[in-house]
Length: 114
Length: 115
Image (cartoon, rainbow over all chains, first blue to last red; front, side, top):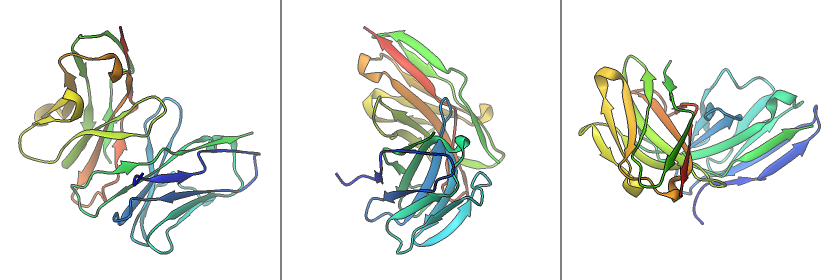
C-alpha cells in the first residue's frame, strides 16, 4: 500500500504522560499536514510542513504539542503532559506542492486519555 | 478566516432515492472546494473537487457537486443512492492564494442508506 501510513492506530495513556505519533506520507509528497478530529466534528487543522520546514501552526496547537519532520519525509507529533481534552483522532495527510493539489489522508491515530 | 457549514447532520434514505447534501462556506476570497467521504472503518477519501472552470463537477461513484458562487454553496448530489454509499461526508475548503492548502472542514453528514 502506498498511501499515508500512521502509527500507532490506537494509543491509550494516562493523563500527564507524553505520547508520540508517527506519519509516513506518500513518498513523492513534499507537503504534510496534521489534523485533529473529535467526536461529531470535522477534522481541524493543526500544522503543516513543506519538506522539513514547518510553515504554519494553528492556535489549537498549544505549547504542549510539537511536530517535526526532520528529513522532509516522515513526521512525528508529540503531546507532552497529556490532558483529557487531548482525546481525539489525530489525522495526517500529504500532498504535492501547489494550491490545486488534493490531500490524501491516513487512517489516523486514536488517542484515549484515561 | 474561512468556515464551512453542513446543515444536515444525519440523513437516512432508502436505496434508489436521490441525495443532496448541503454545504455553505464563509470566505471573502477565492476558494478551492472539496467533498471527502469516510466509509466505516476507513480513512477519508476524496470524492470530488472544484478549483475553477465548470461549476458542475463530477466525482467518483456517480457523485457530483455544483458550485454556486453567489450562494457560497457547494452541494453534493447523487441521483440514486446505494446501500454502499452509507458513510460520513465532509465538505471542505481551502483559501487561495496563500492558504497553504490547509483545509477547513464542516462537521460532516452521516448518511445511512437502507435496503
